[in-house]
Length: 198
Image 1 (spheres, one colour):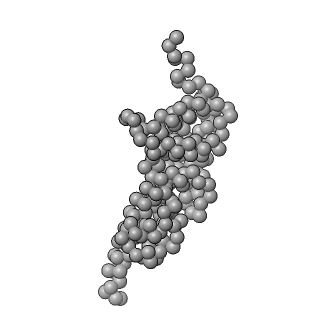
Image 2: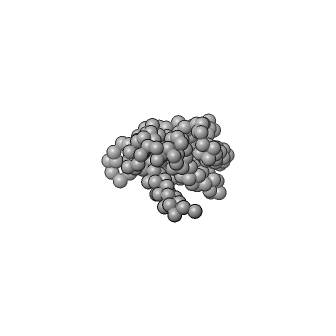
Image 3: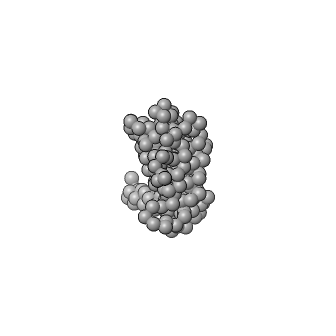
């Protein structure tokens, strides 16, 4: 066996890690419209080196984000064990959007429908399924309006995404305020009702 083989393998793994690190930064800042050329430039590697490890942008996006989306899916599934379904849904959405707040690529993947990656599609479907169960339980518990459906979650995420980059005026980031306002509107008995001073 050639003495060069272990060296070549180490170099290939080093380049793979550099590519993934660069892709995380580029996708987080610019979203998935960034190209493999952009990633290669950011990594300080030749474009051919990146293409040898990742034949297209979808494969690179899967390597970067599949694990993150699986973690979010697991959090959504864990929320099903909570007694108060509305609070569980609210806490899950806050957690998921916190993960995406500084990562434009993750936000885009959370909004999109179909994906070339089975792992990403499976994770996203699992998130939607868990949210659907939480909504149904919250409605059964009388905490959520009966006209809310799981199809409302994607537009809500898109609305919050549109204000993610607003500058914070204080300790609370604007997107958290708007998420709270939206979720209050989904309740049958928002906490603030009936508490205004006369």
